[in-house]
Each structure stands twice: as structure tokens, then as C-alpha cells.
Length: 193
Image (cartoon, rainbow, N blue to C red; front, side, top):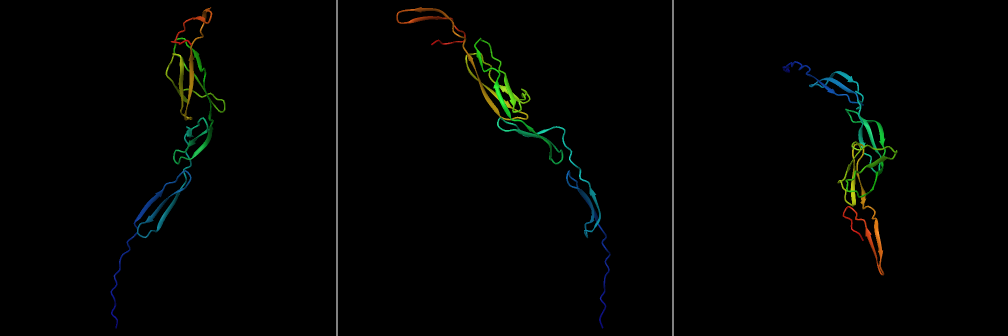
């Protein structure tokens, strides 16, 4: 005869539940799942609606405009950085000095720059560009640097000249083989030739 084997009864462990949440994003749903960590059985699942985009009120420059290329700016989503309302920034077309030559008068020169985009709109000094130059009053050629900022980038060098005053002839005396000119002395350390 066979002997009966003794069997032992073990009580069920019971469920040990845990809840995990996958957050929704602007474009994808999320979910909340309650499951057993022992047997992995899901006891509850809840969908979370996608949040949708939350765009900034301010525009961000994505690509600055330069002397050769147009730029772009847009409003960005605060969560996922997607873009909306993409608009073009016209390229910089005109960068010139309002006046590029002066006659020496012993005073420092104020240099003004005219900057326009490809649509003919005048750009604003301080907001769109800065102007850098040394104040000069002596006769010679001088450099002006225009540095773009904000929606624009790059720089351009321009030049202006300060010329001597016209020489006035006070007296002419002709001799046999030469002419003697008496000229009004010019200001600004001018050399005659």
C-alpha cells in the first residue's frame, strides 16, 4: 500500500498594488495604471487627456536675419517647444552713412547711419543695431562699425572722410620761369603741394 503524502496548504499572498502614472503631453495621452507588483495583474486603468500646446505670447527668433539671408521667428510652446505663427524677418538690404564726407571745421563729426530691410522698412538704432566709431575732427578717413542685434546678426564696416577746406588764392605773381601763389592758410594742419 501506498503511503499518503502529507500536503501542506499555503495561504495566497494577496495582491500588493502600486499605481504608476504616465503624464500626458501636448500631443499624446497619458495614463494612470493600478497593478499588482506580485502577479502584474492590472486592476484599474485611467486615460489622461493630452494637454494641448500652451504657446508663449512673445516671439522667439529662430534664425536671425543677416545681410544675405532672411530670418524667422515664431511663438514656442512652453512645454514641448513646438512652433506656431512662424513669420519671416526680411534680410538687411541697405546700410549706408547719411553723410560720408565732411569739410574740416575743427569740430567733431556726428555720424548717422541709415539701415533698411529688404521691404524698405527703416531699422531702429539701439533695438536692431548699434553704431561704433571714434569721434574725429581731423582731416582723414575713418571707420564706422554697424553691429546688428535682436532679430538681426552680423556687422558691416563703413567709412567717412573729412576733407580740407578749399584753398583760396590770395595773390598770383608771375615771373619769367615760375608762378608764385599766395594761398589763404587752411586750418587742420594741411600740407600744400
